[in-house]
Image (cartoon, rainbow, N blue to C red; front, side, top):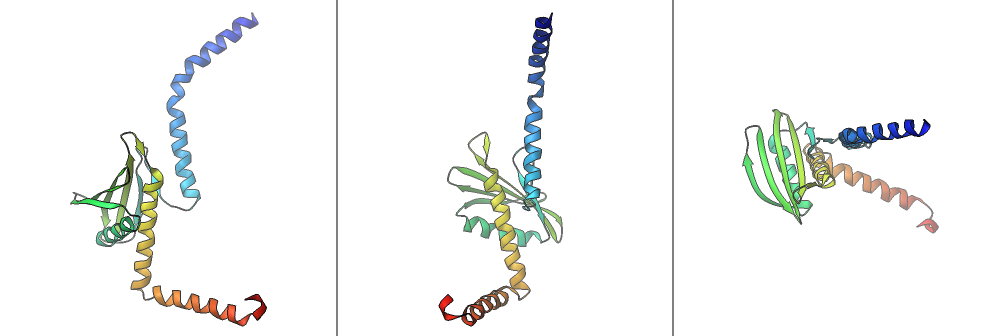
Length: 173
């Protein structure tokens, strides 16, 4: 009798397993999105491998920053096209095909979506995320320079460090 119950439980369990297949993928994706938010990257991800983020900057500013970021990363821009919503940039780096879509949200907000395809099936989420993070870094530098803070603040910080080091005992140098 006990053997029969165990056999029935096993058959039911094995019968349900194929139906749970999609849940693992969804759970892992949601975990990855949560991990990205928790670590402060503020980059979102879609189920099809796109990384995205909205910047408070105009389309020309984000496009320029994206081009600079791709150039710094050694990724070659192959083509740029105007789209219905904004612009699209196609680029390549090693064995990856990179697509960047820039979408105008308003005159002062632009959404960037990136995907780095590695082969036919695989997507390189780390590279897609890094493109967005590097774009953010360029935009932050542009804003700091435009506000007149960029080079002055860096010079003050270096000068402050020099003063602290020089004011300590010589034996600590």
